[in-house]
Length: 205
Image 1 (tube, rainbow, N blue to C red):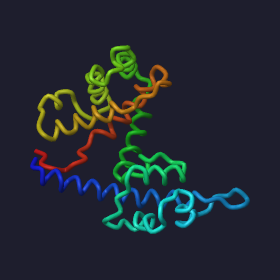
Image 2 (image 1 turned 90 degrees about the horizontal axis):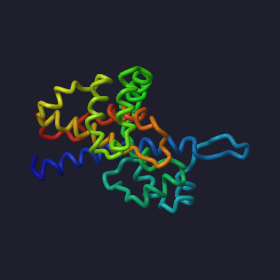
Image 3 (image 1 turned 135 degrees about the horizontal axis):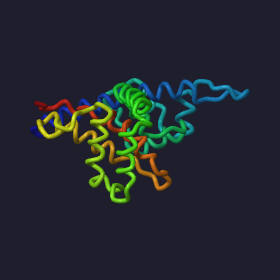
Image 4 (image 1 turned 60 degrees about the vertical axis):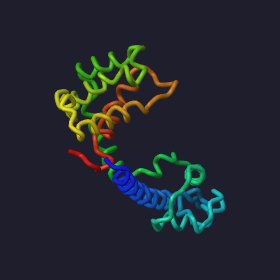
């Protein structure tokens, strides 16, 4: 893929993220305010601005999806902190939410069967705490939940490489020192469904 193609498709991803930010910010503001009796109410742009320190004109740009509305990390975190929401959730696109929903359904259908338990035990081994070491178990889980057959990953077409990459990179992200045994395995089907798609629709064959 040429640098121009990468730039073009990166722009498309940014546009989707901007649209997601606009929609998520607007929805969050609908219930982020509080009345005197404690019931929720709409949070005004001015109050969000006063509380977050982000200019009202800037917030307005985000809500109207203006092309120059491209928040830096500090601005995004200020808005997220004011709304008491993860910055990552503010950037979720409609497709992200759809895949999240599908992933949760998959999790519910996958848990508590013998093959899942076997893969979970494999993931629970100390050596599997390294994302590279647990990659094979991740692909086994992908086959188990019906996302991809193992032999499809061996074909290694550009599309298959992208899907495989998305699965492995998304599955590498969840980590917390307080994760109890088995928690990662329960998150894994969700990660696989979220990762098994082409984010950048570039030169795929």
